[in-house]
Length: 309
Length: 215
Image (cartoon, rainbow over all chains, first blue to last red; front, side, top):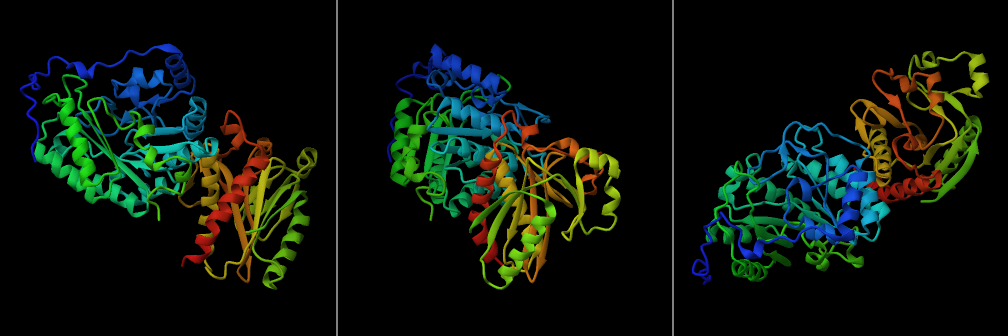
């Protein structure tokens, strides 16, 4: 298969300056102000803020934020991620009620909820996850619920606690190719993450995962990863540009050209993914409503997932 | 599964009605049913040895508070029932399963899912039957069976007078090991009794077939 040579267009290895296609929109307007107030009033964390997402301005201006439950401190120390590592202190059994209320006030037809990893908890945070899904559904029966969850250390009983609450989309990111798992994700493992996606699929759920490009992966490795994920029957794949949060984080390797993102989208669809969102600014929850329209919508809510048996 | 709402009842009256329903279930006159009620203020003493010693108030104090005391043949220690608390009495045939512990876990699951819908992440506590919000107990469970037909059941605190729990050592659990709470105490805006009953009944009806048909 031929892949266009992008290095002729510009020096994609010069990571000192952002290319034009990575310019983020500044936050503005009444939508942004309303989301900001809602997040503050409900004492919620968002991955938009904690992970320094470049799309915050655009998404919040559209009136949508991705709530991050189970606190703001993560037990993992992934080298790509801006979220603070440490010993978490927050465990709020009433957080699900506030999340459900916030989703209602944002009036979302598709909500994405994520969390930090809570490896120190006996259930990995699964019971708060389950209550959050149930509370959001009870308050917002017409809203599709996408959960972006940790790997629960591969514990299927904890994954099952989450699945029993029947999210519409089960999203867990493998983040990068197999070779870079250890240096980039540290405590996480490629096989273990894939096993949780396969488990969710075995129970009939719509599954989704994502990878970042620009971490030092090769084209062959990207192809292998996509092949692996299609083998796992993942429905939705997101591919985005890695942005290095600070100088202490994993060194960015290159800018990925928009034409290359377009190539991977085409490649993924050919391999058999139902949906591939591929672009520099693509993140798990970026325009997630549009990404997953095929798998949500009224007829697919709750137990009636697209691929549910 | 049919759901009955007996409304407000005196404890002894409801026990008599439960026993009649159990007999009818054994005789096959009725099928499995889920009964809801709300009791007049009462302390009930279960079968656990020493449960009676966990009643702290004297008869004068009990009379002043308008709370009666009843001995009962359900499992467990002493507890309180009163207005603002949903009492659920599933009169169901367990003979296909014959596993009382699994039935207790099933009742807990119903309540965990119901509380989840209202935004509270409830959990079990190892070795302590009932449903907990951290170290605060929000629901008690105590069951009995006759020829594998269940009676008694669960009590979920929506918005009862929590000071009434001061008259006992609830379930025999010292206050250092846990206290009692309610949905109203935990949430900025508590749901109504009717809303909670509806969700309890839905979850019960949804999970029951799977429960009774698994081994």
